[in-house]
Length: 432
Image (cartoon, rainbow, N blue to C red; front, side, top):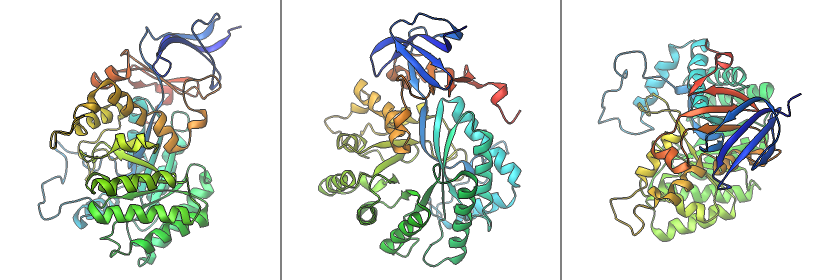
């Protein structure tokens, strides 16, 4: 009789800064020690390289994945100088047309394909935002829930449905959101579901306060946490964040709200930014950024040093928002380290994000910080008793894993090897 189902030898765990051996029984880490005496059904030699908890991807849009694919060149991706920005009507029309041509089976397959790619990249936990109001029925929610069910053995997926249309003025959008939330509650309950939203002062006719109150009203009705996009720059974005913080405290939602993007933190005055960061900490908000859109002066370091938990997401994959998107958190963090190295103003710590300390800090966004954002930190990490969600890489440290883009030798989910040498094992590939 074997002592463990899986035994990982010669594993460098950077949080401990030591080589250890990890014994796994069932879906749990049973033993972490410098030397384990015993046998296992499967023994893996990590060869002294980095072994890390599964990655966390805190912000994805899998429903939109691969909208640009299907031709030699990215389709419908010409430069349109008169239609610039994430909220351009033209961009939304592109998505409207894209979804109109897809069956629910095709949409489900696209979502699965993107999520399987993120599993191959070492991600065990993800949150996806579902932009419902491109079709008149909750098809996008249904397809996402289908994908979640198909991939239950390899990925823990949280879903955050939202509508871009005004909840104040667009009754069709409101009804669609409720249909999607009812569907989610019936199929998966509320543990893995949040309420999403977009806080655009422009789209809501600058009725920011009323829009935020509607978010909290719906979240309270369904007993859901919130994860909302705060995308406006400058004073409008700063005001929106402040109103979100006030509403969080007024509704007793401390620790239940995540603000995604928060671009304005990069261009407010220094005093205003510091004030907002202090207020975020008081209301226990978490924040998520994404490599594709993080402004170069975004204060990731300052947020973390203030005790605010910051997650990272890969956002969009080959769609009208991001043609070069990829569901790989390590690649995302490499790009963050480059973007956050500010050459514009030449601050005193210009190269901090490329230092060992900076790279380790960025790594935390896709591991322990992200786990807190996703609310799964109680059983996360390479510690005895935690869920055995582990990635074995071919580089000796977090820094080299980022800068040399480590291969994923093994990905273990709930104690089972699901990926070997960057490829999902055939028994877990639902597209085969």
